[in-house]
Image (tube, rainbow, N blue to C red; front, side, top):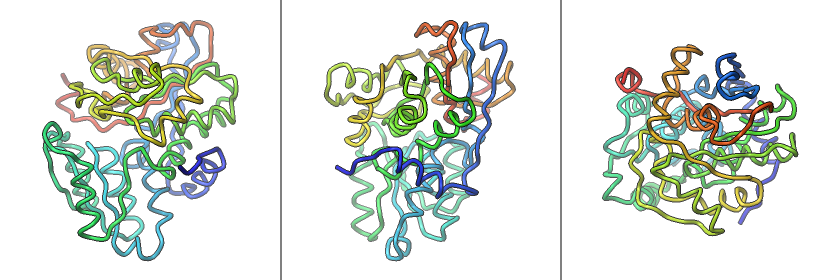
Length: 315
């Protein structure tokens, strides 16, 4: 298995320079009062394609050779990785086909189509997206770019925390949402290098705590596709690349409820005037609900994306 370290994150940062947005780090007096800590929100909802996924997707596709570029990329995703691969492929002049669930958020589906990707739909509760993607790879000679379990994807996502620490300096805690673990693994690598005393905490929905179970049992635990509004965290298991990094560098994984995610979406919209999708609220909801006691500490919070349907935001 290819080792992934901070040199890979630094190389990804070079590949993304002038391409990915250096997203803002926001603060909030109300959030600080609610948590009892000094919070720094790394807002990837302002990233290209609306989420951190663009970093990993572009980093991976930019490393394709001429043959790979000619045949293009295949990906599977509930939405944010789909948009990221579609946009990166368009920017790099290559075709892309994305396997997306029938119940994908309409806004994410529309954006993926607008970036020019071909979409193949499937039933996430009855069909195997990986098998569908592998069939497309075989038929078209394309290259699979998985949403999290790929060294170049993990390295690209690690640039989120790299930028955060460069702006804030060392932190006591860093909270990161976790689905398959690409963002969490990449950010943990950056934290270990740039803020060695920082405790990294993953956050996932209560209904889908496979990462928590995996970290605590010492082996990857697979669960049925979870029913949660955090569609970006509806993964049944973490990855073969991401899990060893999490074991080595992540202090703990905690969970929050869908009701807490709804309240967090409302807080972001009403108090901070930013639009954040449910998955993007995971880390903040854990801090704001004091799932971990961070009183008096300096805390980084990754806000992973903002691709939410207006109807859901209004609900």
